[in-house]
Length: 167
Image (cartoon, rainbow, N blue to C red; front, side):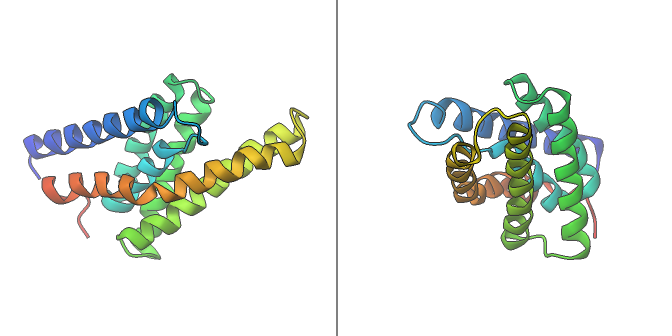
């Protein structure tokens, strides 16, 4: 892949990141539903489609955007980079690089994310478990319901601009 091809690939993925961010926070945000976590799913899509190295870098970029929007600071960057890296390794060695592999990796990442946020808030006695689960469960369901459209955004970039990772 030439340098020009890599620039086009990254530009396409950054445009997908911008589109998913706008939909997540400015289209779905004002609606009376639980806010889905689409940027971690996009990080997983990058790893699923392009491999572990790309997934780690792209997940870090997704984490920077999510952190800039008010989530966790640097922990968000490292978490999403780890999600992208782990999904890249998982789809390289265990699962297929398709929608099913993406959905399995997304479900694992979002369950881990929700478990962590509920656990931290529970240990700090922010709210009782019932209240935390009333927020986390719809958020988890909306995220998983929208995981396929996020995958398709990443797949569009992968298919139309060539895969960086070569099997």
